[in-house]
Length: 442
Image (cartoon, rainbow, N blue to C red):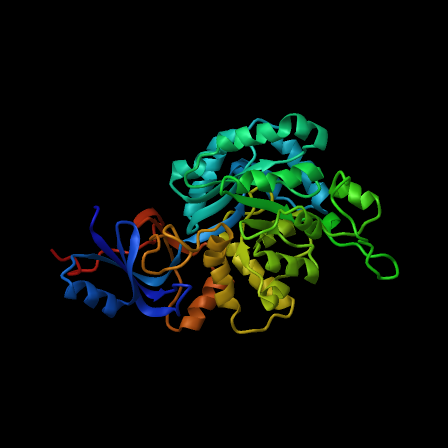
């Protein structure tokens, strides 16, 4: 009930913006976090102020609600495509197109996908919407995040004639709750003029951008046979598209291309970031642009693994995404965290902070990517005043380092409960977060 205080205590509380707390607790009131700290301190604070509370204890770990920073929930019904393996982006795209053209109930599929995310401890999502039937799903389910209206296949002439007005009208139909944004699909699927216009359309409305970038090898910077760069000076004026730029012999990367068009910025995050050089990654950092890494999707499609170790060493802002069931085995975000761990180690990342940084990427990093890590509606970390979104995991808790290692290296399928705005939205049969005897006071 409104005004009641619930104390969620656990063997381990992982706030993300503070050190992990053994035998910790999170006090919640009216959907917001009231206290975070050691259980005894939280309880004492409430009792000293004579505040009634109800305690629920969990022996495992509690994290902020996970943030899926890149997904297409409406493709949840296309799992048959994602169950196979492909020889590259074009091979996968052919299979995707065949299935996409079949009849689908996009809204029902998106609703199912959103509920699956709740079952994996996810409370917020950057959801790309291609068909308007699926536009209101986040609002319907009550999740946080942004529905990004996807725009693709516009050439300049048609864009100038009717495309700009149509996209603006479509964007107006995306519910403002929990959030709306625009997703120019990719640098190779839109002409230069639409790519130049869309950031202005979004920014005039105070909304956000999300673009697939560096997902296809076609986007990578090209060099000539002598090893020298071929991306001679160019300007977007008169260049019809990224593909046209390539056909003229320029080796400019897609990241450099969209940067010159003003797409990148702190109000934009990109998905995949696989085919990116050190210079491309530096551009993302310079613009304050996060990248959502989706390693299992990349593997299904037959792409190279993302340069996880480089992103970490260079201090890039990273988040984690599942992509959709059309290119991934499941919507379990922790499976992608585990995949990122394996890739980082294989790429030579040996620092001891890997577990904590990947957990942060799946929570605070995702919130940062979609602009929800600060302000009154902040999520992604457990701190006083933040929204009370929590994810509970069935891990053994004795030492902090061991528990974090289990979460990162074997966290798939370990979510047991999801709390959104202080209310339990999903729980597994094994969930035993019950009221502690004697904890309820009046």
